[in-house]
Length: 457
Image (cartoon, rainbow, N blue to C red):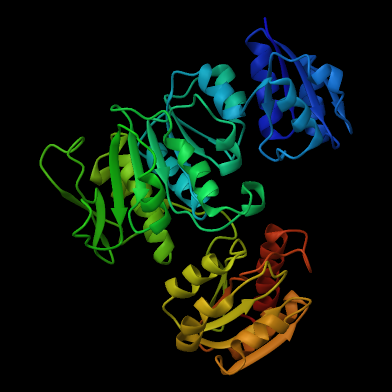
């Protein structure tokens, strides 16, 4: 029996504690903050020892192994003490993977992870697979492995989770894209961040598959430095003479699959015409999900049957209502410039754009051509809108500002014509006026419902 210490008491930490105890280990949970009542109740019920508001080093440093929450940075004093002692540190993902025979699809990338994970899970579930959803989304992977009733898992994996993952081996690994994010955790090195994402490939072999975005320059560049003997399945939005693509778009609505490993009769087409997903980035997400599902054994017909019934997570290009013939879309999750670019690019109708919030050192120049072409009016929703105004005054015919989401929706409804789209895609964090991006998205959706009721439409 080993002593396993769990650092952090969120969904993953408590799940890891319950699994470790179920497998006969002595378990102690330590959290520098306060435990949520729901997690306290679980630990109390299981009789697992824990502490909150502190890290008792004598207790922690007597561990045989530590399972670390992905949110705890290496520079935290408790981690420095652990590293100095040389205790093995793993992720919840690694712990759970020891105790399951289920195959898995592991999905990572800077943008699009949640959509791709949910879509892949949806396709497998709709096709009748016995499949679980876990990782950075849903219920703890470790807690689900206690019963271990699933044949497949679809896991959303952040770079922070992958940092402490050594032994987990997905059946299918998916890497969507790599763009600058969380660089403070990686010594402000994009290469180091890229290598963190590529850890998902570390245990792949000739029986595994690696689905990746052939259009992403950083993936192409950094993957060359990683030797992996696996089945590469690149996807692209284009015809690529330089890359043999396992999936590429023949048209806006047709995905051509060429995966000899699982296809008996050569390349085949999958129609995405009935998918509800909007935008260029979602075409990448769909290509990845469709490839992963095909490798997992779904037929093109099963994939086409599953696509139309998919509902994406909230706050990701989510339609939330219509007023006066104009559609309102909540893309509050777009907290950086690149995510907003994909949203602006993906919507074909004339736009009233609501943007702004806490600026993260944004460079808006890449958005200017799209704004000039598509945006009729920009409503800045933030405490300090000076940088947005400087970027788009003179580019967009009308630029206004407000610090009230209801006022933003009311003005947008007044300015929009039938057939227009009002798009909340902030390109900024939300913390100036809202608790988080979910709060911003919910308040926006609520304001749309209220304004629709007020004007009768």
